[in-house]
Image 1 (spheres, rainbow, N blue to C red):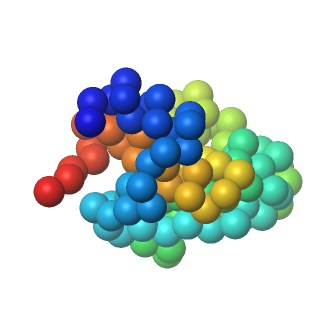
Image 2 (cartoon, rainbow, N blue to C red; image 1 turned 90 degrees about the horizontal axis):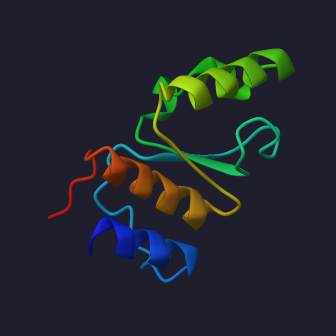
Length: 104
C-alpha cells in the first residue's frame, strides 16, 4: 500500500490492528494533560519508556514548552490520537513519511 492509500485508510479507520507490528521499541502513554499541549489524548513513541523526554509529563510550563518546540522542529517523531490505536496509526504514518518505517 502506498502512502496516499495509507492516509485514506487511516482517515476511514480501515487499518488493521497490526499497523504498528514492526515498530520496536514502542511505548504508548496516556497524555498527562489529555492532549491540551500535545494534541492527542495518547502519544505513541518509537522509544523505550525511559527515553521519553521529561517535558512530556512535567509541569504546565515544561510540558507546553516541550510540545511547542517539538511541533516547530519535530525533534521527536510522536504519534498523537484520541485512542491508543489512532496514536499508533499516526506514528506509523509519520515514520512512513520520513522513510523510517520498515515492514517485512
